[in-house]
Image 1 (cartoon, helix red, strand yellow):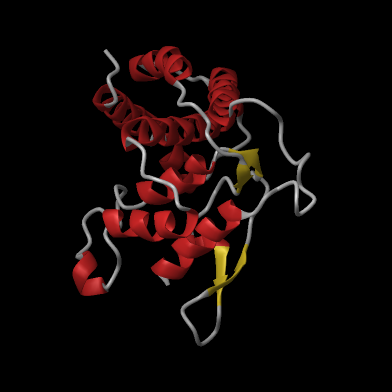
Image 2 (cartoon, rainbow, N blue to C red):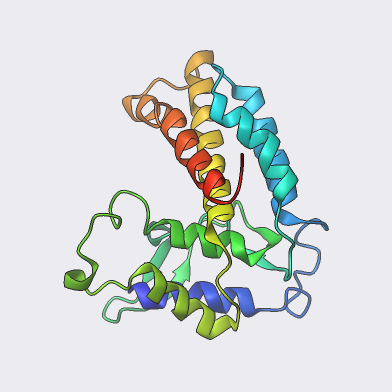
Length: 209
């Protein structure tokens, strides 16, 4: 299942958008620069309190955006629960939830996928006993299909956690405005500070002062 999940993403990233009629599916320019700008605006619009780590990230991330080497279709939320598997075989037959999809840097999807190995769930699991690939093995499966190399993951992990922090801050803003009040929404909103701190930890590993 995990191998098929990774190979499916890799195959998606090998399609030439122009050749399949999606050449105008996204905006030009550096994908990560656009995303950092977008999520910063989202965060400011929903901001409920001052978080020092977020302020540092808002200053640091745009200055250090990696060079974009390739353009591919980017799913935007590639994870196990957005897939349908064959009823009797361990292979992906459909990928769902394309509302965040665009053209951009395939490293966005790839590093978001790899982050799952660092989050609660897989982070403390006995991967060998579960026959789940390690992070390094997962990266190799992807790179074998795409011919790409694994970048320094710290910047990308910092970005991905910053994005999640902005999403949870948006939920906190809706709670403040009275448009979200469920226990699940409050639980998600409470994750903003820890996500921000974790993002800044990765930023420091990537060289942020």
